[in-house]
Length: 164
Image 1: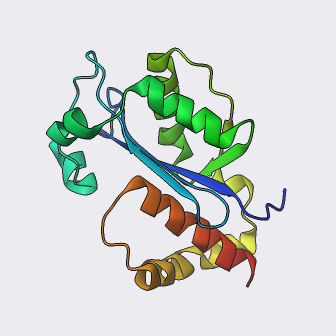
Image 2 (image 1 turned 90 degrees about the vertical axis):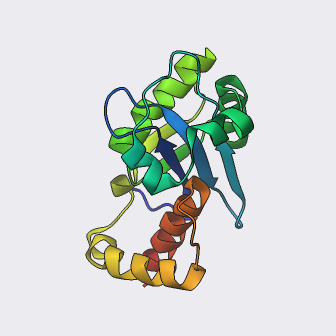
Image 3 (image 1 turned 180 degrees about the vertical axis):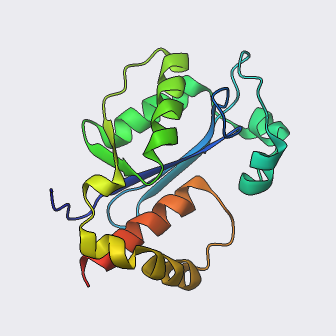
């Protein structure tokens, strides 16, 4: 198991929870408290919308239309920020397909790789993960459920559990 000093973390919010959903927001936690977050404008063929998912991420479809960036712009920004790095996700099983959908829509090759967070967690970290994450959430006081905030919480939890 690789020991990662300061992992890059990605989090993706989506239009729903099923196979027809698509990414609506992507957030990164990089080194030295650098974060990136962008809403993603729905492509014309991205029509699925789950109101239960909207309640979770609190981003109405109208907000995406007004403030979201095109898939190509977001995909290019991710490639520029991440290069050939590996980025980790605590929701890899859903985040990876949403990234595939984003880059496919953008018609851009994804330069970085995404890996499950579990690939760099030790058993000791896993044993205290939920307890430490709850402390991080309380301390950071990030009230909005947004992709970059979620990525920051995961990254900080990783660092604290690693250093225990």
